[in-house]
Amino acid sequence: MNASKELRIGLIGTGFMGRTHSNGYKRVGDFFPKLAYRPVLQAVCSRNLEKVTDFAQQWGYASVETDWQALIARDDIDAIDICTPNEWHAEIALAAAAAGKMILCEKPLARTLPEAEAMVAAVEKAGVRNTVWYNYRRLPAVTLAKQIIDSGQLGRIFHYRANFLQDWTINANLSQGGGNWRMDVASAGSGVTGDLLAHCIDTALWLNGSIRDVSAVTETFIKERVHEQTGELTAVGIDDACLFHCHFENGSLGLFESTRYARGHKALYTFEINGEHASIRWDLHDLNRLEYFDHRDASALRGWRSIHVTDGEHPYLSQWWVPGLGLGYEHSFVHQVADFLKSLETDEPCHPTFLDALQTQRVCQAVLDSAATRSWQNTGIYEAVQ
Ligand code: SOE
Image (cartoon, rainbow, N blue to C red):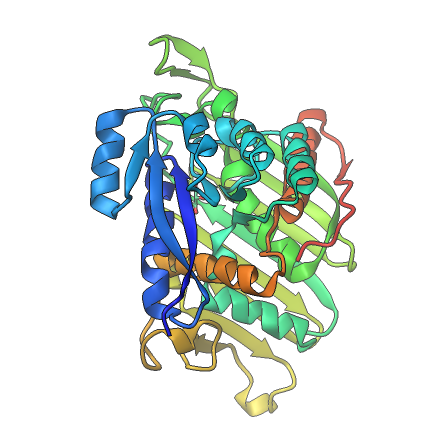
């Protein structure tokens, strides 16, 4: 049966993330036909009229706005999707919550901890449904890792290790600001910590529980870059690389590394978890596989299993093709939309909520503070992330 209830989306931002989310909205009904709700691409908003009109035509949005406040004021919009540079997340979310709109916010939740706290307070006060697009949770192999860990098969966890490596900012002539807002601390809030490690931290909190304290080091390899707004060589305020280690509340040790200076790596997100009985590892470049080692296997046959996570009984897979055929990056966004729509039916939160993402923000802040002060920092996490 086709979904009968509408969720009218107002998308803000037409960049890379605007495309991934739009694709999610468009595909979800074809592959999750039993959901009661269906997204309606009601309006898209961006400052440049020509660009936003082109985007609306390409992706099938019914109307355009060039002023996000006008979009929020519309009564034919149920949910605001924030795909802007990080500097706008808090202001838009506060206004959307005050207008009673549901909010789907791109990660990281905010530039800073105070902004993130204000966003959580706003959605709680308004009682509006909210979620943050930490999309990697919704790749089938990562969700399977969660199921295996929750089943207790790993036993006591000793180690959690994660990397997110890229190489796209090595060029010293790359500017900051404008289209390169990720390079501008005023716009992004931080560098790899908020952009890449935030993914690793979200997954880690979800899979392995709270992080108590951290010790970090950051580096900015190229100290000055031309700023798009002024045309002048300006100090770079973001972290180009960040390493930290930490204690999890469950007693395990964590080791995290992220950089945009790892020549040869484009988006190498990997994690490995070592438990008393078994270990798990995963690699975004081979995203349909989950590797699993179980010490309880017969010793002659013991070894790393490479599980191709494409079977009908694997997470989300029953909705797609036949066993053996893989999914891609874009499917994580389709799954996030499906889970959000399902949460409207069940009236359950769609995790990670703003409150969950606030815990990730706490770890990011502790990491940056630790690097700045060369000292261990408590994260102050007070809520279990779901
Ligand atoms: C940065 O290059 C980036 O696009 C991040 O902003 C995304 O969150 C990550 O998934 C891929 O890399």
